[in-house]
Length: 448
Picture 1 (cartoon, rainbow, N blue to C red):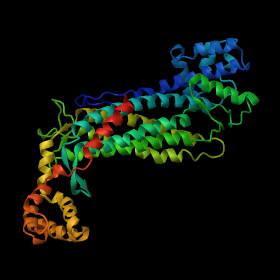
Picture 2 (cartoon, helix red, strand yellow; picture 1 turned 90 degrees about the horizontal axis):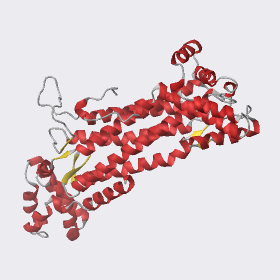
Picture 3 (cartoon, rainbow, N blue to C red; picture 1 turned 180 degrees about the vertical axis):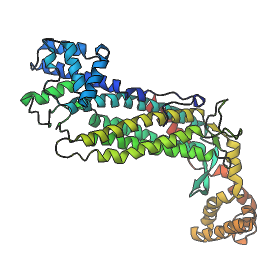
Picture 4 (cartoon, rainbow, N blue to C red; picture 1 turned 90 degrees about the vertical axis):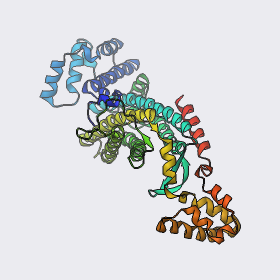
């Protein structure tokens, strides 16, 4: 995905990129250092004055950036120069208590989860916005007839609202999954060098619990640095969400094709679709969603690889996990922002939907005719009769209704008026309207 968002799309950056800037991650790590100091002071491990001094100075804005950058360039270490700088500005006699008993991954992993928690809050907000927009669409289209398509072919009539109801149903479960996973994902880790609590002894679990309390997180039962399933779960959940969003965007993309013309994503005035074809009104937002969704799903295998940590720690898998998380999170923000824009601005073309329903000259109502005739002849006999008429309609390019009306096996049980009534697609949409309105109500209840 591009770092810059075209103004014609009327889409803004939801803020995920900013969360994953290096400076934002550094500040999150400093927040963990402050929580560590507070937790240790509460247990008498370090002086309270030291904890207060550390917490007061754990602000990136107070630090010498040039000194930090020089330290990173010289050491090649992920955290040490930041710890040095914090100790330096805290000064004597308290600076020596900075990072007491912790190891790098304790700080970085816990801090990165603080960043991810902020990202999740944005995801939930965007999902709610999408759900509210979908609720409006479901209600608008609750009784708007459209061809239901299976295997790319006309199946039976449905309504556009029913289509949206299926989107709502999936999105609600994704929101639920993210909520349910939060206690497993957002957990502080402070087990020391190998996760054994050796540096803090019997007080280790209490220190970790104190950090968790200060940060509003849970606490790892076993603070092993080799545990990575909670990070992988996050990426997998984002992958599931991306699969649904990509499918929705692909559906809109397809229905927006010239040959379908049933819907159109918002195309604000001034949007240019092509440098050479002035007529183009391209599905830019949907294309962005589809591309971002694919990028997110591509991170799932990498996240699973990141669980393959050797022994008690391995920077290799940490790097994999960091890449999978940040890439998936940024792309999820882009994807959801565009999904909201599409759902809010989607233009419906009910006349085109109705015209497309008639493309088969009544064939889309074959099931309705078969079932009605089956009440008199049995389902299989009725299927054989209607099958003959349907195949002749296609092969001979004749009207389905005319063939039915000319077949004595049909007219012996169904008068012409009944046949004509059975060919009305608006009378065979089942519970589409009810399902659409129910889904809209559930979406509003969740997002409200």
